[in-house]
Length: 308
Image (cartoon, rainbow, N blue to C red; front, side, top):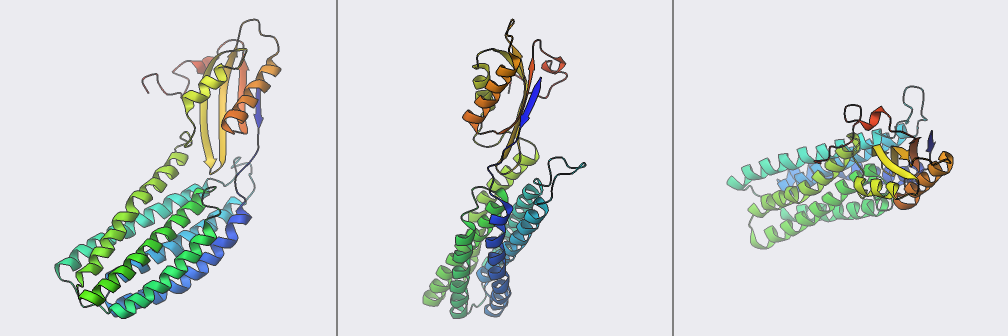
């Protein structure tokens, strides 16, 4: 006997799209000016900030594409729909950030050997304008960042660029006051090192979803313990918890009832309610058995071994 139930608490694509479009327009219109200014002022910090702006624009465009594709209905070939595209977009955003950070670190090392002359006045003006754009974009994206890895990736891009703008402003002021042009490269390195750990967190979260790992905040052992505590459940096997995308967690499990237990339908409902109430998982498939099926054996199952 089995049963499934579907319910979604994820933020809707329509809610996510509008702020992304506005942020994309602001970012795209500014990055060209910032890149030109960086070349004219000979500022690596400003160029690095423009590069981050470019990845911001790319991330926002990818996020919008993911939302558009994710709206497609499930079909005979993709029974879960296109929600997973959002996670691919988040992973791609993280890879873009890694590439930009590595480029900036390499270029900064070269410039530290021979610091160039820098027009700090123009550098300062452009950095302040960039900071304003970043703050507006962050405000637009903040509402959806906790409900969607896709939006979180875009938010992280803009957030890192906001830090970059602050760093460039500080660098421009220091250069203007002291003439120490090597500070420009130092600021660029600091931006890269600050971004990398947060980029790794985003990439790790995306890969966990792609590998159908247990979602963050859910303990598989705890799930098993709670199910075993339901009256009438003798044992549990073939338990899996995974996410299709942000906010869409699924569970499947086989439970073996106590000998002599008669009402299997009532037991099924009790287990499903326990899963929903304790872990907020509303898409579950529960199979009730009187004796363990072949998937209870290690050779037929995918459960983690006792050593793990």
